[in-house]
Amino acid sequence: MTHGREQAGSTEWPEVYGSFRERPARDYELGAGLRLLREVSVVLGALPVVLIAWHAMNSPDQVPVHFGFDGTVNRDGSPWELFWTALLVWVTCVLGMAVLSRHPRLFNFPQVLTSENVQRLYRLGETSLIWLAFAAALMVWGIAGSLGYPTFWLLWVGLGVMTVAVVLLVWRSATS
Image (cartoon, rainbow, N blue to C red):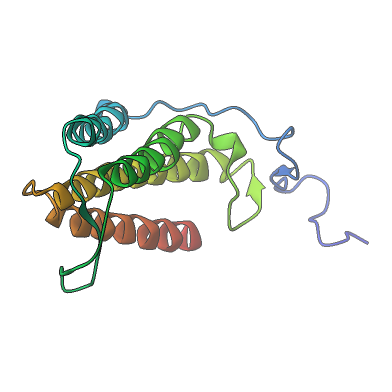
């Protein structure tokens, strides 16, 4: 009885990694473009946070802090509320994903990791997180747009990039 495996002398089955400790380290290098995008995303997302902080220190006025889908303001608030929102998005979404993207062994994957697919899925997960961090950086610029800067439209661009990145991640991980 073979219990689902081929007889001796035939093709070996790939090793299956059941836990994080069993997973191998990554053995590939990302291209220079993706490495640069990761670093640029962190800096690009930090700039509007600094801009919003400067605005909050110099403006006691109320600023728009919530918008409807049509772009109309439906709530005003303190500029510091806007700052804390932007900072939270930058720390958790931009910086957090940029740091986490360097550790693909920690990711959850939608399929069993084997010796045949682990490096491909690591690369796919790492690439996806880098694009998600970039999308979040664009969204932080969109948040700054509520202060009157002409960047509000970047919120929608960021959401679009995020949607495309997630759809591609799901599709490529399911088809590879």
